[in-house]
Image (cartoon, rainbow, N blue to C red; front, top):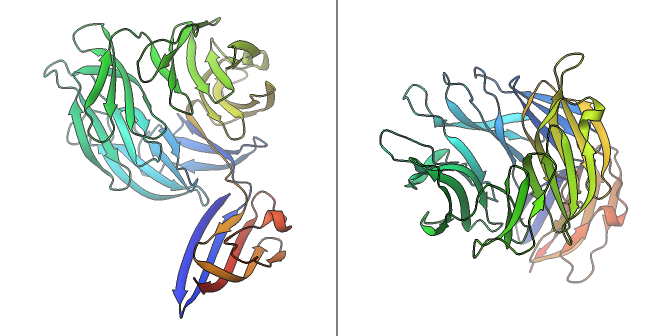
Length: 406
């Protein structure tokens, strides 16, 4: 539930308000038909289609939802005859807010290979790519607020996969030397871009970082391993072999989700690495899976792919990881290029420091219901729903607190 806090001070009286839209958990599916399809996470219903305007064949990818949930980030341009752009959309109105250039076709700048966003969304990291003639392979940083490249460093290798630590302080890159097939892992300081450590003992792609940042999952073909992020050593007894080539891995504190084979999803118990569920989407008519995103908060995995019969059409299925149940399987556009879940925020609440409140009002602007809260002495935070405000998906809700400044 998206919140916007506005604070004003006048004549020693502090007024604070927050506005929210309930039921804001969504799935955004970037498609090769150059649109983004918006689905409700709980029902799978398509709610909107975002057209990437003023661009020829933009092929949106690199989707990211900012932590507050109010903005959707998009990278465009898979083709050669167009600029590579960064676009920001408002997730409430589904309207464009701003855009900037990552690389310019007119200046003969090569398209950059997307790596990762910083956890707060303030930076985009672009992996070094092989440049045979000069040997210079820059790792570049794009500032999403300034809309410009702000930093780069030469890592002298061809980057293939990347993860960031949960606090954003370390960057983990996997690749190979530009003139060989040697597999290299480099760990960078996120502020200075200096290489902290590197090793050539870990084969495979960097798949997922643990929520605490103490280990990461590396996969290669049909096997995955757990690697200590400090020592870069494989943790004893952590190797898992699956039935089919691995496409992606997601983890939380309890589960590991592996998308593998043609269109299969395996769910493991992280405590003993036992297989809990194996879901074959080809039985539902899927031709293949391509992309997936896992929302730890709701425990939902949304998978994007396509079917071939009776015609080519995009598909989206959402799976409850705790039960292995497919909650729905719906058509979505053409062929997906990326998928991202926008989770619901926590309850409708307001916290204002230094306010001695004498009144708090919660209003459902959609239904007209009003709830009044009597502030207790010293209380500076209030939750509308716990005090009886009823909200439904799509409702607009506002809160107002008034009192004197302490």
